[in-house]
Length: 322
Image (cartoon, rainbow, N blue to C red; front, side, top):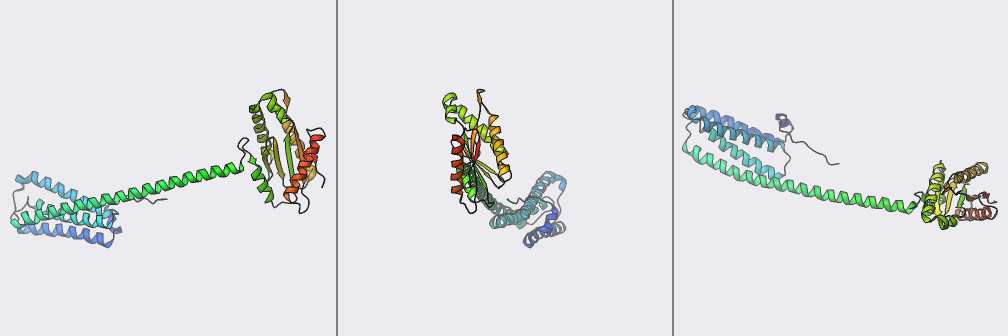
C-alpha cells in the first residue's frame, strides 16, 4: 500500500524539519528583522499617508512570498526543485522586503534600484526554474504511479485469468461440480484408508435426450448434480465423471452406513421428475478399498459392480466383493 503524506503549513512543522530547512527559514527571518530595524532607524522616513496604496500592495506581495517560501520548506520535493525554489523565493523575498521599506523610508539609490531589482529579478528566475523542476518531479511521480497502476491491473487480469483457468481445470462446465480430473487427483492423494468409491449412472439417460431433447437432459444433469453435491459432506467428494456418470468418494469403511447413503442417493433421484412424465432413477456401483489396493483397481471394481446393478434390474446399488 502506498503511504500518503498530507501537506500542512502549520508553524509546528518547524520542529519536524531538517536542519537545512530550519537554517534557511531562520536566516530569512533574521534578515527581514535586522534589515527592517536598520532601515527604519537609519534612513529618513516618508509620509506613509501618501504611500498607503503602494505600501499595501507591496506588503501583500511580501506576505504571499513568505507563505510560498514556508510551503516549500514544508514540502517533500526533489533536491533540485527544493534548492532552486528556496533560493529563488529567498532572493525574491529579500527584494520585496526592500520594496516594502521603500514606501516607508528614503533608501539609498543602490538599495532601491540595484539591490531591490537584482534580488527580485534573480529570485523570479530561480523560482521559475524551481517550479519547472517541481513540475518535472510531479510528472515523474505521476508516470511512475501510472506504470505501477498498469502493472497492477495487468497482474490482476493475469490472476483472474489464472483463477478462471484453474477453475475450468477442476470444475465441470455444465453442472458446476468437480470434474473427473479433480476427483481422480483428490482420491489418489487421500490419506484416509480404506475408503469407498461410488459410480453413479442415470438409468436410460439417452432415452431422455431422445424423447425430450438435450436441453432437458442438461437440466436433469444439473438438478441431480446439485442435489447430490449438497449431501457429500465431511470430506466426502462428488464429481461428474463424464456424460451421465458421476463419482463419489466416501472416507469410511463402514459399509452399513455406505448402504444407507446409497439408498438415500436412489431416493433423492426419485424426487426429480422428467417433464412430469416419470421420475429419475440411478444405478450405483460400490467398491471398498482393500489393503494397499491402488485407486485404479478400486474404480474398476466399482465399475464392475455398476454393471451388475444395471444387469439385475437397475434403480439399485451393488457392492463389489473384496
